[in-house]
Length: 113
Length: 134
Image (cartoon, rainbow over all chains, first blue to last red; front, side):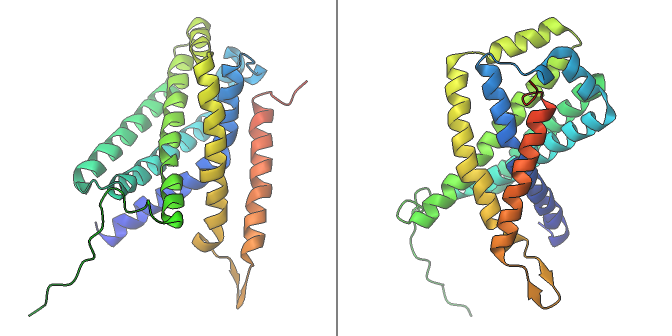
């Protein structure tokens, strides 16, 4: 990989890692509350639609999911190598493809709201 | 003419087992799977939300409510905090050292700053979700 492209991949990785390190504990806690049957008022249909319908909420959700997905994809690529899988090209194509599909789905669903 | 360099034989898939630092590294790196899982859950939620039907949103919430999910999220939260969030903060001064002229900001200041910001961000998200409202 060229040095120029490497810095882009690394930049997305670092940004996504920082975002997910800061935000995901709260996200997991919210999923835990939902699982316990204690759905917080902000996660009721009308409230969440209003949040995701506003461009600020839309952009925030898109950025968080997009960057976290790329972070996870890039890190998973290295993890595959660390566990002894040496077919880096195939692994890279697969993980980045899944991240790209997830990003497109996120954009599509947010656009539809 | 170049000689064959000596490559120390190393098991490809289990090289990290004998060393505590390497084990810690592997435990940290596999947190990317949790990031992926929660991204998938968020996209699933967006799919239900964007259908525009409160019933489909209700069905999504109902699908999340079972004991297996409670156990998974509880374990994931602890693992994520220890090996992703806190490790990320611990490495921050090495990844992003802050320097003013000749003076370097002590690493401990950067780490404490991360913890303070993290508490603020967490409270903000919980407030946004209405958890902190009475």
